[in-house]
Length: 66
Image 1 (tube, rainbow, N blue to C red):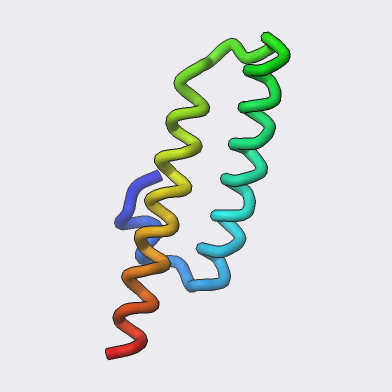
Image 2 (cartoon, one colour):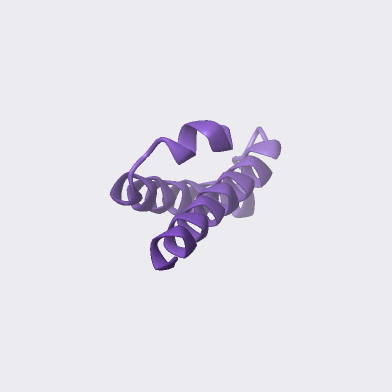
């Protein structure tokens, strides 16, 4: 997932994407806590992707105010 693809999405789509990433992050943390997680980098990727989505949402909100 890159920022260019995210900028093409609507605000509602970005909110849905953020909700999905938060669920994914929760599931990965749960797997890590129980020792079932094989790909530890997935936790970092999910967290970074959520941050990307939040950044784009903030940019869109700032652009709407101006």
